[in-house]
Length: 220
Image (cartoon, rainbow, N blue to C red; front, side):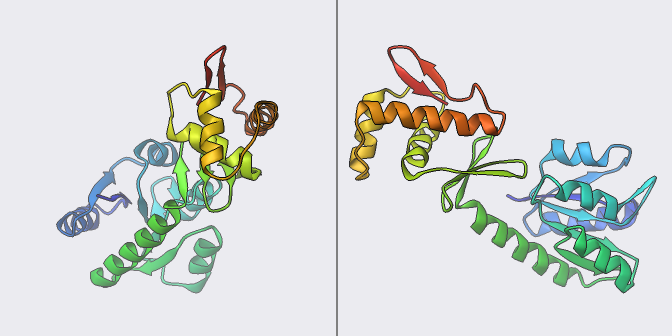
């Protein structure tokens, strides 16, 4: 069930949105205080954000801009500001849609469903390892806004370790996996690839995530 965070200071509209979305199969979280919106969003980890512009002590455009610096979270601006300037600012700051009040609730629902489908399709090609993202389709590792490309063998080694997260994987197991995937490497080549992979992880400030278990193998 997708989780939608509603950041709206109009209590009546906030409650109506929550009820409607719950009736249509979504989980909702509603912010009722607005002192720490950005940290609240990070803690809640929603799948989509409904964000008003007119908020106490801040505005949704600023929130949108800050969130977009480090996240691809789908954002729909829902606002009473019916002018092209605010719409342009919001879109330039990273909002996916801009909807003005009063709005057709069915159109909002359609936009939410469309955004979540698009996000789910993109996520099928990625594995969230908490500390980083392993992009399967691009053979890259990603953290925040930094992307590091992996060679074919580096990617396959890391992918196999991620699939066996928190388990020790022996060198023989890795080489057998690479052999089965038609990428045969010998013992010395494996050592070189592990070293290069570790160096690339360190470029993302992940120095100790690839652990060597002496005499046993490796683990993530």
